[in-house]
Image 1 (cartoon, rainbow, N blue to C red):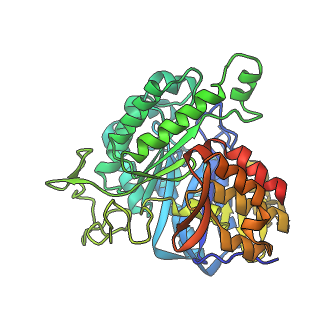
Image 2: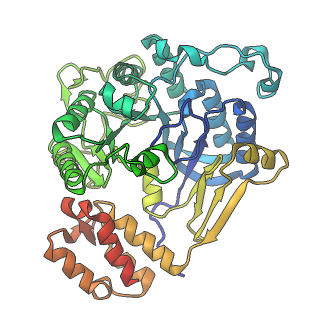
Length: 476
């Protein structure tokens, strides 16, 4: 089968930390709240990295997600980063993202339990468990200290799970942090020098309207995030939120209300300097600076944590971005798009480590995934066996389906020539009826982007993304 070769053959690495303080009722990602196996998990994770070592493989994105990676102290993140760099060729300027949740940082306390001693080789590092009882009492200095340490460990991009700046919404979502703690965490991240911060928000809660949602967007914009991920609340089977909906305890927003909120989100953020580059993702186009080196958040970009030469923890030289008018770089996109997520959207190679983590080999069109079970993951690696839970070689139809689906989700759209090359069919002829249907509804059309002809949906088309995707898939 012919597949498209990405212009950048470099791989991404995903690390799944499967531990949470509490499981959020809307989340269907694999995670556990039992922390008793953190030490053996970390040992197993380092074993997996060693077993799958490929020192010649070039890696330009790393993403540490979960779960809640920030329940681990920074020095354990440093150990993971060191193992990645030992086993793979991590390139200079690599994007290294870590998910953090407000309310999950605390000062470490020693944990003298014989079952947890093996991971560390001296008394100073033996106990790394956090004191769960004192998390929400951590001062700004304590949060800043952990964040600064993460930057020194090589993390240069933060994805902060704020979800809302309104305490009533946080309570409904059963988040463990308060609005005040979210603000404190974001301020600390800027203060210690992070210049690439993504902020996650959830909207479309039962009864939510534009006024309520704009309060969250305005609060977020006050911190001048470099990236915003805005997710409509979804009700995934197997989650408490889904069960509540089925029982009638929770009444989701109607389709019209949801569509109105999506449209307003796109317009509101686009008008404020954000590039809506994927259906749920927005990247800031530029750094509007006030005199004196401060941006509109009031945070000084020239702070003690910025390295000599004008670089901050992002690794970007703030004085050498080739920008066009309007805040775009010469490629026509934002510097702050998620380079790691682009691996998924481009159907490029990536390696996943940890329970439930997925991997994809673009050359072999092979997808495989690890077991979704912490004890099973640990047991297999202790035996020297890779913890693979399943694998599949994508069929031609599966590959084309993903090519279409992922293209429709992005402002870049579907590469018309790329589709023809992969499928052997002319895009305009093969999907003639679907194209006419979409253009008649003014939901999208052909454009010239990045020197290529693409078929892309517009804002209204994205509202009906699932429907439009099904029209294309039915033609395959």
